Image (cartoon, rainbow, N blue to C red; front, side, top):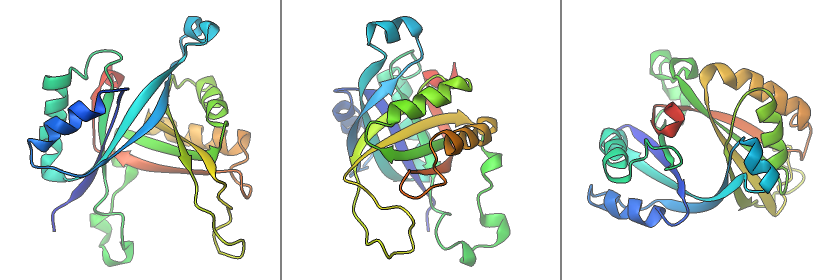
Length: 213
């Protein structure tokens, strides 16, 4: 079975359609485009109320053999390496299922990756609060996606009742920053308490864009 990856790209509003059209040339179809807000830490923009910009986020499952071609296309066709042109990254997903069927040397060790993506799911309106706490420990920005949760019965094993409106904060950080960010958000956002939110981390196999600067 071919290894699988999840390709993600955060772009300025209106760019996702162009990117998906180029990706179709590689024979890839499908994918989801979601709307979100990009955040920056520029103090002058914050004073003016312009610290958030509208974004489109592409989620596209691919075979890992296409990973390099897609990232090169993002560089050549969309100049994603330029500041404020967006970012693209890949998350390996083929080894996350059925861990009991995998030998130890087949499992991903997150510490082998230079970057990881932190996802924080909180109640509507709390995404900006998450970003305030993250900035206090040195991270400069992230992407807030507005979503809808699906309700679950109170008697289920899952300890969180999902409310209709959610903020999903996506943070792309260096691996050494994961632990302090998680500890900060769990404490400040009470994520260890029922119905407060969820935080999880996935490794990033490749990153292309201005974040590398």
